Amino acid sequence: MIKAVLFDMDGVLIDAREWHYIALNRALQLFGFEINRYDHLVTFDGLPTKKKLEMLSIERKLPRKLHSFINLIKQQYTMELIHVQL
Image (cartoon, rainbow, N blue to C red; front, top):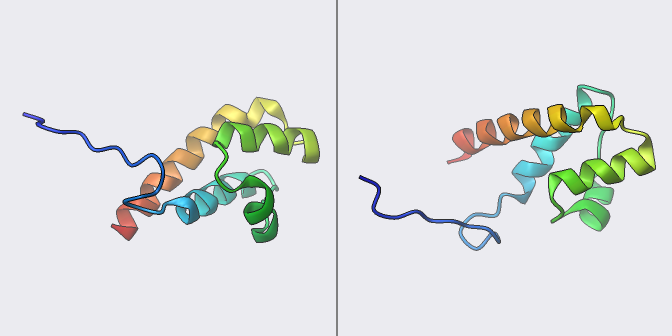
């Protein structure tokens, strides 16, 4: 029986920003896109993945039809990183 559920939505318990950065770039690289470290820190850090993908579509012509797939793959990569890191 589950007695409690713990959510860490703001990085207090675990700072997973780097994991999300790595995972998103791995997914983007499948299609020839990437967010460099500077752009990540200055523009994209802290934004939801869907917002990042929309920005990439506007600024770098990432096809919108790839958003759902990239988001799905990014989540899988993130889970892999979590299992390795924890």
